[in-house]
Length: 447
Image 1 (cartoon, helix red, strand yellow):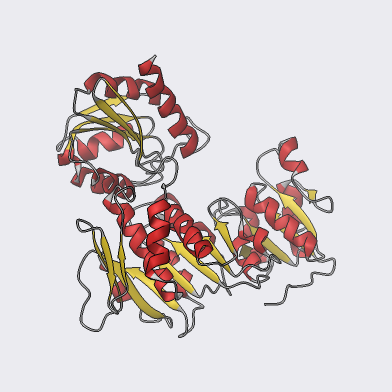
Image 2 (spheres, rainbow, N blue to C red):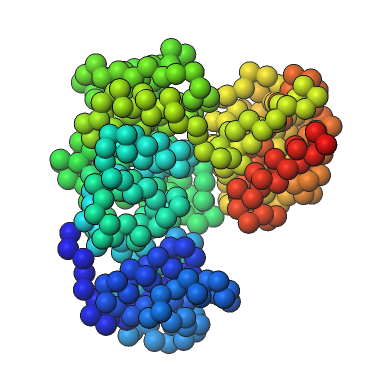
């Protein structure tokens, strides 16, 4: 695809986070004039991250002059109901996500990974597999570097983590291979219900062609009635057997083997994956790699050296014969349920934060595996109401008091697991900050 020439056109960028900053720089490289706005008062650091040609305007000024914009580029955190986006629509000004804006100017094929859980792990592993295969790869999107940073980079492939928020405003976005890893309750405060959430996720396939490949999880059949309009060739991954004539990979978790319908086979070492859900992520990455013509030997070698990502079910330490595990990235009930699959030991679970409209029924369904549940923060009451008939629940007001309660409840042989099923923004900058605080509290036990 040839890069657009904006020739001095005014582009309004909504949101001054990493995506907005990257979009503003891309506008400048394309010859346009970026105006950036944000509901929050910008920090000096954020302003200095903008290109010299860009200028910050307050939201009221941006709204008054919205008709003069050639295009509005929105960051993922901006809801479709935001007054600027509604004003742009009323003025017949096109609104696109930063993902879409970048994709329109990208000259590299894309692999897109979306789903409720496992995106970052799968994207990171795919990047390592493709690099081992000798390809020059950009890895980013919703994870790390925004896709705008890849434009003009001459990459052999861009592996892109894609969120449902980014998919709300796409039009021409066309990956050559795309996967929806799974779908569980999340972000319902923004999407409204699971049906709307599913429709948004499925937009990743909208512009794909018969030569492209859509990869879906066979163990979650939610997508089968919904993919009639998908033009791409479909293959699947999962732990259940393939149906007659179905293409894809079967994951044998106990045997630590992945095998495709055509005999393509990967034997996995003992170091990673640890948890069954990471075996699912590996199976998805392997099926994508197989579709891209990468050998099973390359996938196996990459899996042997892969260490997983920080705050995704990582062992922290053992104190007084109690293991402490950090899965702070488990920000929805489905992720927490998957995390619990990894343990046969009695688990004391720390769960809480901001619920994002989540239904905790999925968490309640697996509470029989727990010894005790420590519910904290804004979501504590909702978690207790959903789970108290299945497990003993102790409510605490904040994270530190929840950790103290988990420590006091633990006995030798137990596991204390941070898998909060909620967002972190009530007490922390993000899930990584929450995980670091947890690790610090564990370290204090040793002192």
